[in-house]
Amino acid sequence: TRRSSDLVTNAHIVTYTQLGKVNTFKNYSIRFASEEEYRKAELLKYDTEKDIAVLKLSDNTASFKAIKLGNSDKLSFGDKVYAVGNGSNYGLSLTQGIISIPKINVEYENRKREVIQCDLTISAGNSGGALLDEKGRMIGITTFRTKDNSGNIIYGLAYCIPINIVMDFVRSE
Image (cartoon, rainbow, N blue to C red; front, side):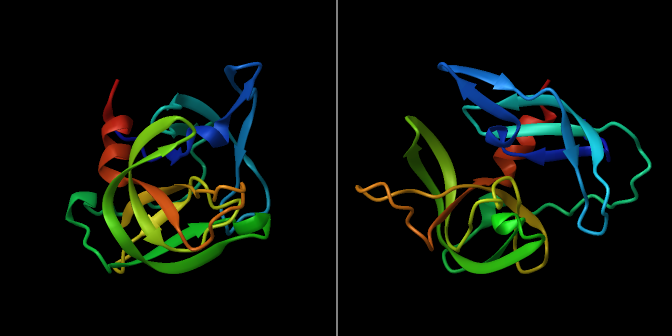
């Protein structure tokens, strides 16, 4: 079941690895783009294999509307997409690109994941942000970039978790 106070992001945002063990942080806080103060949130569940996490606002005083969802199974090559995030921690950011591969299995950090490959620039701070279609519907969550053989980030290629995979996790018990 979905609650209006649930927020979805990447698991790598709400966890850290120390001595080979995945740990969760003790406190979580979020801030909407229109706010200056942070709100407390609690971690409901996460999956590091899928890189998805669900948080819940601790209070229900925020007035926000849930985003409309698209269908990631209906994406096509060349569809325009937009990534929303907090690029390089400078505040709300929006980048535009296209879907280069609607569904691909990519191995990243020794895990094979089904993702959407986009010709899109994302930077640190975009992880866990919404990937939107031209109608403003959420079709995925930005999650990672790959690196070349020298360890340099390959810019202009972004990988996103399809919204159908995200929602299957959100709805699971």
